[in-house]
Image (cartoon, rainbow, N blue to C red; front, side, top):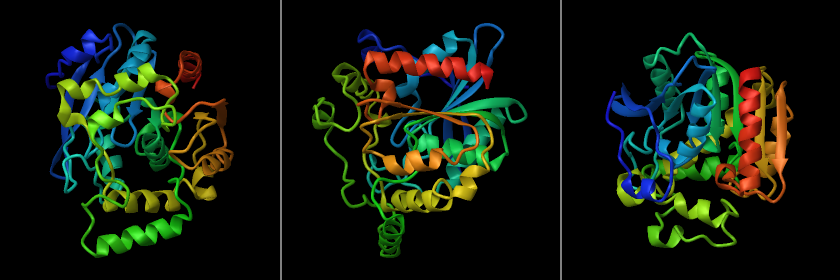
Length: 315
């Protein structure tokens, strides 16, 4: 176990901080961070939280606190290349990956390190984390008994997928793998932390802006933009897994999928289409909500966590 970060600015602003301990495993020569937060009494279940692209454990502290108070043991992952699990891009803000298999293996190593490899557990995945949660369940290396998908990345937003795959592969062949992909150059923090009505993440200005307070204390946690290697990994993974009807139909466990009506970060039509292929999927869409449901309006957040806490014990 390792010390957790203090975040005095976030605490002063009223953000809840994680109450467990950081842990690290070594995978493929790199340290990968997880945050383990055990229930105060007999746990109602085990939950692994799979964050989205550029995210880190602290961003999910509000949801983690709700689940902890509901009596669940929690493990939150910092994916390789994100948060305290290092960075591999040419620029320190760029998220780079040579493929997603390393992400899955790192998650499984963390799950094994906390002693959950043979125990039933649920996964909560947001965006890219939803995609990876589906892949973890499909691998059947861990005993995944239920999935909660929040705005899952079933497909990247730019179609056709094969064209994105081809362009990113050509960029890699030209030696651009770790460099920012087209349109993915890191953005200035002072600019992006200001809520704008036409943003793609949330309608709630307060929740949007508080999301950036973590960086005032720990700027090293911030990531912005994807490398060509990550883009290729994303296209290849979606083509081979979540956009395959046969592949999705093999995930025969209870799934709760929550999405927003005003979704533009991931491909909304593909999400709706492929969620219907899952044998046991309950899908609810929030009217007018955007991609970051956990940062959405109070009405959305309240309903979302009510649905999740009801679903997990029954699953």
